[in-house]
Length: 163
Image (tube, rainbow, N blue to C red; front, top):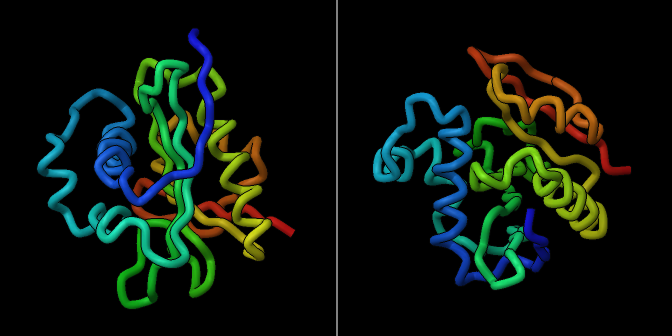
């Protein structure tokens, strides 16, 4: 497996973050929804529209030759337009996406740890996310200190305390 480096997400990464939303939505690889279908759905648009607004922060993983292969970022979403993993005002919601060939090689864990450290340094007490129950990433999230706080139809909201 080639090496990768992490860098802070930039405003110009919006298109790549959209790709990662599509990867996250199609995590199972079984019946992939087309890119245009995922990105036109309001449930997913909220994670990328207007990137990088105040409060947004993220990290991008690149190969040694500069090819982006994964990203994790968080947004503060309003109560009036909550995400899948919304738990309250002032709690950033995490989104993570990794290209399939790079999954299960430690990239997701490095992205997750980097972003949790970033949120802690910015003074946030918690991070939230939503994960479908069949998604193998649940094991990663649990091992990194996320706990289920709400159960929904086929998915759970998980929260990590940062302090």
